[in-house]
Length: 436
Image (cartoon, rainbow, N blue to C red):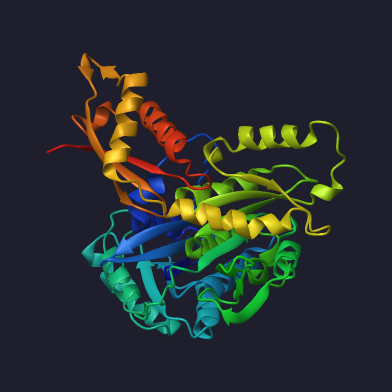
């Protein structure tokens, strides 16, 4: 089930991004060591009182040449569409402005829970400056200081109270998948073609993500699937259609709910930077990934066209070397019949468990092939490994010193484990841990 979402809104220069970074904590500053993974600071994951949630910084949404007040208005509208709880940030130093009143009017009509946070209250004497904000009609203003981290906990306490306590019942036998990618890569056509390919439509049910339609169907093999239709999540109007970061944000919501993600590329246009950004999110979230090259019928073929395109994908998406690539056409139905079977296979790999005895045989063989590295005269010792989780498969390797497990050697171990057990389509995690 998707995490609840908090959106941060407010006019420029009130400290939205500082507060966003405070709430997101360390997670926002983690730099992925894998080539090609790009991070976008508009969307992150946080945790408070044991509840995980997603957080959106609407100030990071670029609305181009929109007039100042229109930009603020549209960012507030995006927050209303996406969020379960809205944190409206204003500044104690400037007091209530026309822009604050505009946002307040929009939020007041939204029927969404709104937490009013007054930033830049950097010392106790300034607390008296917040009382005028009762005039916005949004309830109690919370004094905070983003730069010093003061009062953020109070805001999160208030936000968590509005999170739903209902848990969606998950049926592990049903594989949930979504199609992600830039606009106009053919996601809608692929969805229609997949569902029209002799599938039995069981039901159309509303998803937990607003205005997504989850389609439940059964493949010819009898496997049940739920397809999360991200194409149906697009909003009308140029604000939603032309904001690149916004489409990345919508893809993130779908990725959270999926077991397997189909990363759709347009064969006619090639690979773009946004493709790598969206795929990077799915990789970091540990989802199963299949790279689907659509509109293959539009490409003029020569002897090695498919091989050359596959090499280009591998070069651009180096961190997805485990993901299978399939070339399809929604228009001609080319290879579409293979997709459900491939999704099922990737899902099985995501849930694969390796007995510890067999895993340790593979690890010891790997060490024999490539001895562990040394650093300042000290050699890494690997005692044993065990699988601790699935979706994605996660392995803890017990060692003498965690710092001696260099990224390159962890990657070598991952490759040896993949060679032994395949794990096609799923990332796997290697976690070094010092043996106590």
